[in-house]
Image (cartoon, rainbow, N blue to C red):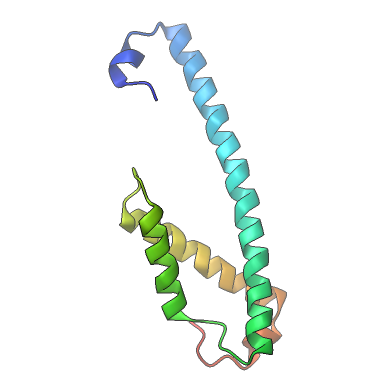
Length: 114
């Protein structure tokens, strides 16, 4: 990563080229994130189906706390734990919503859902 001082020493054309390069990098990360989020969600739908076959509730707050602790342990920054928590709350909410839409039967008898 370039330091602010190094960026300040670039010409306007070099800054514009750098901006373009960095945006392309972010675009790549976005494509990877979308791919991984979809893979994760497909897996959570399968988990929901297995839970129902085991007669387990689909919503497990203890498991979600464990997930968050693992996420925090992998965090090297610059995102804060609070930022990651907000992001993962949305991911977990969307995973549950997709489980529900993909397998309505999963939630019909689930008294412990969020």
